[in-house]
Length: 421
Image (cartoon, rainbow, N blue to C red):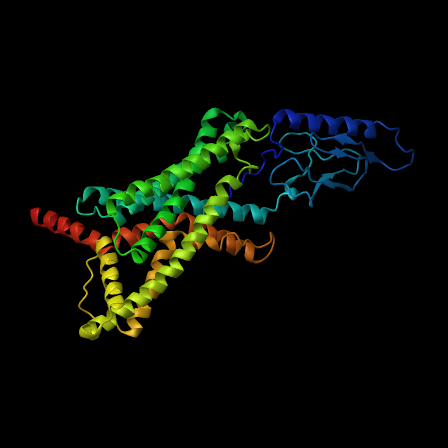
């Protein structure tokens, strides 16, 4: 997600920031020290307010000046204001009794309100998702019967999602929303940034593992289950470690890239975003082919069960592959019912909708961001926040709480507990 922090200097080095302000002050003093134009009007004197040079202004008028570019959250297309009173003195703020420049006009308050609301959606969504994922992980590990390969992949995906959600909440509260920590720029916040990036990338790669495994089950008739998980562990945990390590080393070695807890976009972000985009495109291809194969195999199964004596060997193999797919996925579905054309379509649609959050394909639409200031931007921001933060809740509901093989042992435990009361 995008984190929004108003008031933090967008110039990354405090030393550079002080140099910029000192240079602006020196240039301003050379202007305001020029001999004043002799006339009968009353003027407020020119001055440097700490950020901006304010020119001499006629009494009773309001001086306007461009908003400074080095304050994050300020719109440089907007203007600040400073009021010259009729007696030729600048307006003083009643709280400080000092001359005051009005920079509140530099911030789009409606936009700031939207950003705060979006961040609240992220925080609540990640919190609820974290709770749901924690319960799901406990269930997966507690019941020994849930040990098939598909559930093992779910465990790893749920763990990466849960840790990512937890680290994001810590990152936002302890770093992004904490200006002193950002300015101190300690080693701890940088390590936290690296961990956030690692588990974020790992989440995408475990979603890729989900798609790869499902696709392989439908394409390969005989699959050696014992060799699957070590291979997927290498993809899900190993490749993200390599990518994030490369990103961290390059960023550490580049001047100007190691400041403010690495909160700013980096020149090396593509090292992480590139493989993530490729994994999402691969999952999209997997989903399309999975749905196609599912329809083909359901059709072959209908023919097999309707006329078993006249089934071609290829159709028998397809039927066997579908049974293998079900068995490898711990399925408890019945095979006695002959699927109709409408039921095949319904199953394909349901499979597509269920697999979208598991494979993370909802993120494919989020890069298409509307232009800032358009009517669609608030809708996009809120939708992106809900989609990203609630993915953990969604997969926990679909693949744990509403999962038939999970509900069976948990239901028995509940019945036993009620009977013992």
